[in-house]
Structure formats: C-alpha cells, structure tokens
Image (cartoon, one colour):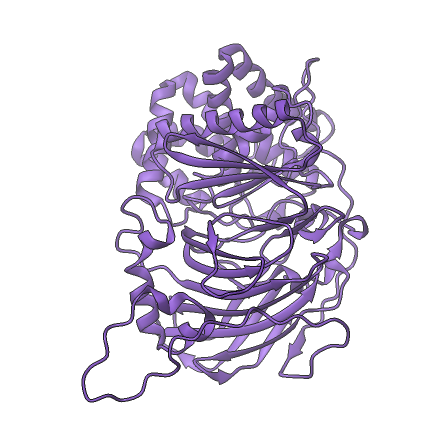
Length: 545
C-alpha cells in the first residue's frame, strides 16, 4: 500500500533508493490474557450515551413492525436484536450507508457499529463497539486485528472487555502480531451469525517517541501537536494473522458496513460519509460507510477544507492553515485528475467520496491509503511538484481501486496492490504529463531494482510474503521496483489497451473481494497466455531475464 516512498523522482537522473529503515527492536512475545477487571488509573473517557431503540423487544398481541436501519444507530440498539436480523437489515440498507452502484451483489457484508469518544487533547480514546458477522468456517475463536495491542508502540496495552452474543467472553491480546483473539466458548459451525460487543480504551503514543519502522514507525497510530492518526484503531476482522512487520503495511480486511458516532475535538476526517449524530452530544460526528474494509480516522486541530468533484465523486482536501492556497489547489487538482482518470479506466468506486489529508508520517512513508481516504505526508502539501508529490498522489489514488475496492493481503501477497498501483501511476503520468514523463517514472522503478542488484540484492521473487523478504530494502526494490515492470513489458508486447483490459477485468470480477498473487497469475493466463508468462517471470521467477 502507501507506506513506503515507492520511488524517488528527481529532476536529475533517477535513483530509486529506499529511505533508511531501522530494524525493529525485540518485541515482547508473551500473550496477555484479558478478563474483566477494574478500569486503569488516570483519566477515563466514556463513549457518548448510546441512543436506545426501545430496549429488548417484549411480546405483543400483534406483530411488531420489522426492524429498520435505525437498529444501527448505536451498539445498544444493535445488540437489542439477534445477529442474523442485524446482518439482514444492514445488508438491505447499503445505499443508505453510502454504497454506490450494485455492489455488493450477492455478498453479505459484516457490520460495525460503535460509539467513540476522543479526549480534548486527542490522546485518549474510548469506544463501545458491536461487530456482527457470519462465520466463514467452523471455529471456536474469532481473530481481530487491533493495532493498539502492538507491544512495539511502547505504551500500556488497551483496557478491553467483551461479550459474545451477550455472554462475557475471554479475550487474549498478542502484542507481537497486534491481534485480539475472542474465545467463543465452543466451536461454532460455518455460517453461524455472531455478535461481538467490545468496550475498550487506550492512549495514543506521541509520534516523536515512536521507534522502529513499518506501520508503527510510520506514525499510523499516534498524535503530535496538530493531528492524531488512527489506523486499524478498533478491532477489525482480518483475513490473515501474521505479525506486524518492520516494513510494508498491515493485514487484509473484508469489506463491511459501518455506523459510527464519534465525539472529538477539531476536525474529523474518515473514509466514510460524515454528518450529524443521532444523539444530542456536542462535537459529535456520525460516520457511515458500506463496502469499506477499514475506516481510518484523522482528528486535526484548526483544519480547513476545500472541495471539488471528480466524475461526480466528491473530493475533500483537509489541510492545516499554514498550507498556501496555491498548494492546496495543486494537491486537490492532482487528486481530482487521478480519480477521473482511473474512473474512466475501471468504473466508479463503491463509495461516493474520497478525502485527502495531511499528517506527519515518518520513516519512509510518503502517503498511506484507506478506503475513501488517503494521507499525503504534510511536507508534500507545500511546494507541490510533479517530480514527486504528483507521483505519490497518483499511487495513493490508485490504491482506491487496488487494495480498497479489489483487496489483497499486505502480509501474504503485498505484490498485488503495490505493483498495480505503481503501474497505474505510470499510466496516469502518460495521460497527465505525456509519454516522456511516464517513461521517466518507469525508468525510475527500473533503476531502483538495478541499483539494488548492483548493491548485492538477491533477486528473489516479488510474489512472496512480507515476512520472507531479506530486508526492507529488498522489499522496496522487488515490489516497488521490479514487479511493476511486468506490466511495462506487457505493454510493449501486447499493447497498453490489452493490459488495461486485464486490470479492468480484475475490478469487474473481484470488487469487494480479495485476490492472491497466485490468483492474479491464473487470471492473467486465462486472459492471455503471453501476459501470464510475463507476469510469472517478473513476479514469480528468481531472475526475470
């Protein structure tokens, strides 16, 4: 995804070197088992008072009207119904939660409902959350990704309690993998509807105290004097259970339906649609979304907002007052142009709004994408230039289609979205700035790979799990440098239109679903045998010559 500076573009000859990475220190490996306990000392936050929906239904002489979308108004309202009813109602009201077009077709989406409170200094967060899902397989445990559980953050673990279908549950946090495991008490069969309710609170770490790289070092769950960044900030369903790595991004999450009410200082930026809360609480924002795999949040002091449209899609730029009007206009125009270009190639996204906001990302991160939102590192808002800033925007906007709409695991199959986003950036440069600029961008990727080879890089296949790369430098050179060259060569052999047609097939057939690198190869072979051969050589072979 967008965690690395994928390629450095200068006006001088390109040198695609990865920014320096520092090895992650030893992470605590013991699991911490959580049971209901007293709240920790210090400041305590309570979520906003939930809006009730009449409590638990009572028998009546005549049938009650069928429940409607208002059952997603709060965790309490949701928990008054059984899991199967919530899933049915929520999936029947996806348009009310911002879903565009005919997605998700026949695919049932899980549901998140939460009341959230952030303290006045943007440090403390408390939430009451309900997650409703249908089990994909028989199991006695549900595993959720929860970045606040990561021991590498160097803060006290979150205080958290939970229940399964109304009964208290035992929760176990894994600080190495940033996972939360919920014991179901017994094995539940595949297809079983399930309601999990979690209450948690934790403190955000100061960005200038972070150590290490990857999602922790980037500052994806931290605060500074102006902004708090919340990534994977609540327990999320995950397709994989791997550990947090010292490079790259984290996890794979199924598309879902969201209904959040957030009490916060400053300006709230999310990947969802924002409006007034249903409860009478000051500084409260209601956030809804459908088809979103995650809802990232930024809380920014004294932020300003500029808006535009891209092919009918709303675009909001949220920025600090010290960014000039000219720079904001340039960033917004570039974002609009990229959204319009990719929409022309692949069709509409499943959501109607994309936000771009600034945050002080660090340790190699120039941008970071979420469904419906991306972060552009705050210094790239100033003196915006095509040499690098435009490329980062093109790359992050491309992730709206490949990783947000068409998903993949950043831990097991990172080559899928990163290589495609790199290639789409080349296409955007060709459209926006001409073929020479696109060739320069592709050459920068090639140079990055070639220079790494000259420095002793072993040319392992880019199609491998994140944990299997020899180093952060190897990951950057192989995934961001070598892997996109498959599509560059395919263009030369088959024509640009043939490559774009293949990628459009991936969007049409796998939106709101997930792809592995093996699946991409199989689909490429079905589309065109020569395309499959080229992707296999650049992604799966030791040396692509």
